[in-house]
Length: 309
Length: 309
Image (tube, rainbow over all chains, first blue to last red):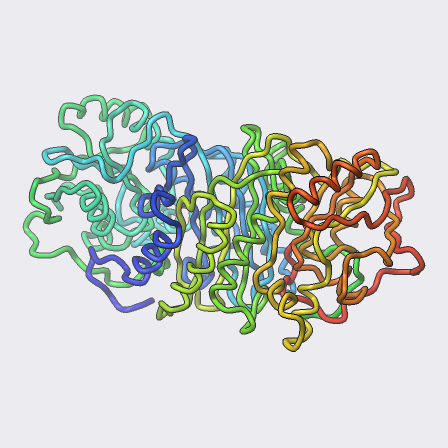
């Protein structure tokens, strides 16, 4: 629970680690650091997400919620690349003596998510942790056509899936709508919607909303070399503007598409039952603007996600 | 640094986690848990190894040693499956504020190992840790012909590579041979020796010596449904019997082969410059025996590895 930071600022520590990794990996060796996942020369798309107790979850999440959410966040990353999952490996670091109930419940939530978004759990590694529980999942998949953050051009429509701010609302209060609490614990990742948007050539750039629209749209726009103008009045939220743009953890999709694709995108929304809302337009000017606002709202509270992206 | 346990006993906590993972993954979904790595239907071989500060390393290992050893242990797992590495993803959990020097040095050791055993570092995830540093590497590769733990038959020769007990000797005392200290910090993994043994059809079963000959040979024999008779007088060690069989961290190979392959194996040893020593024979009886001993020596001290395998 750190101090608030500007809504569109990247974590400088994470940036430092990414640059160090790039340097150590040698030129041309790092093909994907910085996107939701990486695409390998053989066509494999891979992502890794870690959850640390006390950073990415607290007592509000049951062990089953943690197992479910670890899978869901990785599925979300892969889907935002346009990929469908094939296999995963799991690394667990757990305190001793082993809490067997915790392990059993964790895997029940893991299995529930795995049955919703099927993949092969190929293996894992269990180690002792003298500190918090740490769970790290590497998920690999394939994409008929990947969709990166960098493909947007000026004049395209910016879309988001689902409802924004639900997880923030669930985080802020336990006395709120059941769907908000559920969004925090069991994110309703719209996969394989991202894969379909990519396969059908509808999206030009895509990212998942793990850190909030302000930060994630900024990442997409910087990678694409465009700006954005977002209309706050059309944002699909009942949780308030700050919750909708500055918190994250909704694991919905944000993508750009040519305005000519609107009817096809609306058909896909009907076919999949996932709401898709046009919230703005990409611009040639690099600024990421919220119509009628001088700046994006800052988070009222920091979320579980620490410095992860 | 827990209490000593019988040299051939599996960690019950790790076993419990593996069984829970198997159950959660559904029938047929887990293809490799329990071997050094897993082979996927598409031919990918994958492994994951985690290092936790205070469990897998202490102040004797520099950050560069940790980065090197994380790569080396994963390479060792893959090589023991007969696979050659292709790509990896890295998950790092680090305390805040970020110690940039630690990160820089970690990646310098990581890069050194990566240049010895080349692969593509495809991506990663950085998270905040309120506890120890945790580094988890997932490494994927390909094998022309995999070699599992389960392929040994009675009457085959048991071989080990390199020198055993060096890492134990380096762990026990800082005033010892430089090569022992180096073995602890920068394991001299003989890869791609395992891949060559598999590709050339020489090894019938193979495992890497991460937890010591006693435990690792037991795993190989149990998976193969055979026993073993090992001659302690021929073990390639200058560190003492307990160090050679009960500690681990040497990351050498242990494999079985038909006696008819001896000359070919000795040629491969000459060609690669890696010593290979025949230390015993597999038996139809299930016992794992050390000639002239009622039981295998117990570790005098426990090692970094916690409950990992």
